[in-house]
Image 1 (cartoon, rainbow, N blue to C red):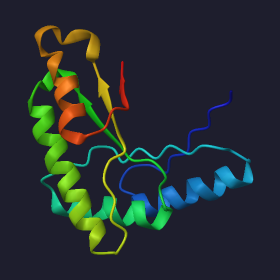
Image 2 (image 1 turned 180 degrees about the horizontal axis):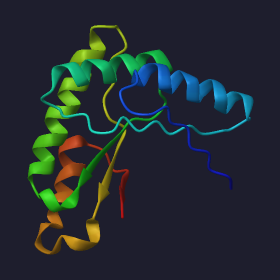
Image 3 (image 1 turned 30 degrees about the vertical axis):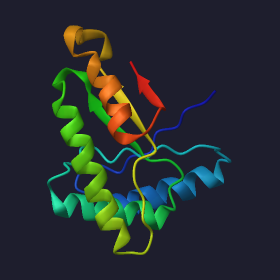
Image 4 (image 1 turned 90 degrees about the vertical axis):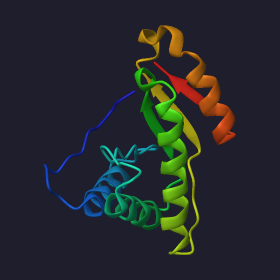
Length: 132
């Protein structure tokens, strides 16, 4: 399997970068495109508006919420606020969307916070949790 990385440097419009990557992937006959939005804080309205615009303009098939297991139950708060903000921003464009799954990082270092994984799945009603 070949993995191709497309980046355009810091400070670029994420929507333009995503569309550039999609066009490039189509030319290369790539089947899957992963767009990393690099840190969308759920309480930053401007960043969430940009994310919603990106999802709408790219017609995203899968939206994954990525969080660190180390934050414990704060991850649940982040997930709920993020998902609600995403839903509100995307509804404005008549393209309502919410997360499809969760990626939980640093899962091997959490000790007593392992219950967070179960709680994340429960509150999001998503059973497709990816962890590493």
